[in-house]
Image (cartoon, rainbow, N blue to C red; front, side, top):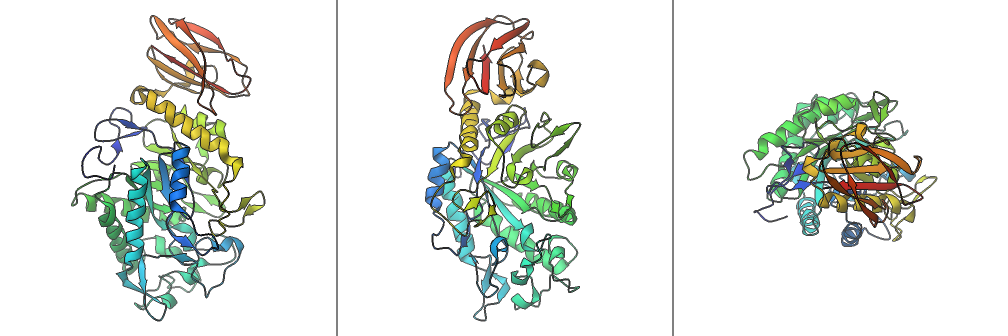
Length: 453
């Protein structure tokens, strides 16, 4: 995956644009865990062990992560207080001078070398990496009562170049993620190009413009997407670029901004319209974009195994914001990657296992031929190529006996049940197509029915 030859970078599948494919035409279903400290180091008594994290992903059969980027030294420390004289996140893209301030005309090679090493290491495990370029939580307070912008390189007090990301003295850097300060946009463009140059030859790369920047960032994000598209045309390879939903306090972003963007992939918030919810009942994916349905933008921390299977059978690529070993507890985030406990929170194992099970199943299916067909199954959760393959999810709130419309099938099909948490198959029989048939799940909980010729 990291070589210059096949399978090559991902591209939107020409026959089924709900998914990506590689240069061989193989359909690539993306699913996996991501966590806050998988690129930069947070000051901690127990530094983040990246190789152990990759072991964890491989163990769970995950193939995708968002690689988190923090723009300033405070990172996520706002969740449990900060000390403004401490650098809590490193390395950062810009070189520090002996005075401690940043020189925005010089990049820090340590950041880019680490980025490349970690993307390559993930690629060796068959894991695709979306490189997050900017961080919305590092330029404004977002209602928290403190402003991380005091530590940002574009704060005029923190650089030797006279760059001022807060020209009106608001104490916030909200304008940094807009195109309203040309000097800053120019610096950001140089940084984005440096990232792209660093990893362009690697096949397992995707990009994400920013995590939850404000609603005013939309045109700026479009600009950066087009910048990457244009710049990569001058280089050896082109990679998918993503846009995740903006967020401002009290004003959720508009998912329509994602779907009309020039991005290849998107991650929406829960607002789906027409009675649907990406959190509880995702609408059938229409293929307008590859959708990486991310719990980060639906709950923050949340989701369950049922959500994974509902998302899968509605044509999405589900991914999980994983507390991993960050010290997350029911009262809130106590670490955000700063307090590495060395213990993986078992509460989220059902989500992790479910993602791995959907990937195992996806590898066995002709996924390129499957589309969401809720009308073909009583539960409404059905991927199907009528007459050839059907995958029906039966949530535990449904009765064990359900109908599936096989009127599009001629001849017999093989029917088997799959345990959605373990991937084990239970029972197998031959059934005749041509009409609506009734099936009874052999499991006393949720189950997955697979039908194939």
